[in-house]
Image 1 (tube, rainbow, N blue to C red):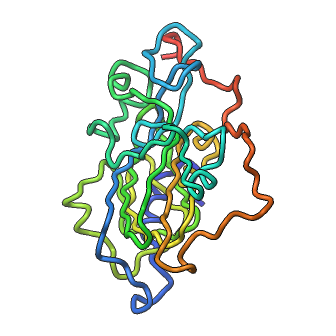
Image 2 (image 1 turned 90 degrees about the vertical axis):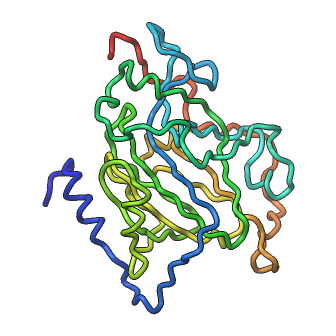
Image 3 (image 1 turned 60 degrees about the vertical axis):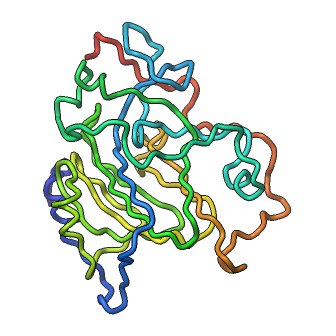
Length: 274
């Protein structure tokens, strides 16, 4: 058995997996309605707020996990499912998950792993209730790019309510021309959890055909609690069978605190630790 830290062997094992279904029964959608490029990394924000603050000799910085430089903030007044069904919103708290990161750079530069001036310039981060809406039946393609921003981990990304077709994966930074040309449309594996390799990327595609509110998150509990997550909202289809049913009679509607991170949980980022 390979060592548990042998990420290269793990990558080549996963990248050689194919579907158990015969290609005649596995239809990979060629049409793409929405494309997203989502980078995964870490950043820091002010402990008493939800916005980025430059690090210093203070305990007021906390380390958060991000998708396109935004860390997920769970709503505390009502559930997203309730807000979606009743069209009540969350009074400006919800924000679209950006289709692209705010800056493009060498995502796998290992000089970004430790605290330092190089990564600090790329680090601006804030917390928000991240969502992305899709029309029913939309074909969505996402390239997840692991970054070296304060971390060197693989990221198992899990999508509730849907299966994802793994088109390709690789090490280094994703190249849309070179890497897009080697997508597997014949017998790609179908999963609901995909492993974004350490300092690498993975390209997936799924059909948003299950109406409702679905969590997309890193399955490392540590990263999940730090905010590496977003919510995908799939709109109703044209029929009753493709529409979200009403909530049950006993569905809870009162305010509640569902913050994933305990109030006193934070990681110090003093200069002395750089």
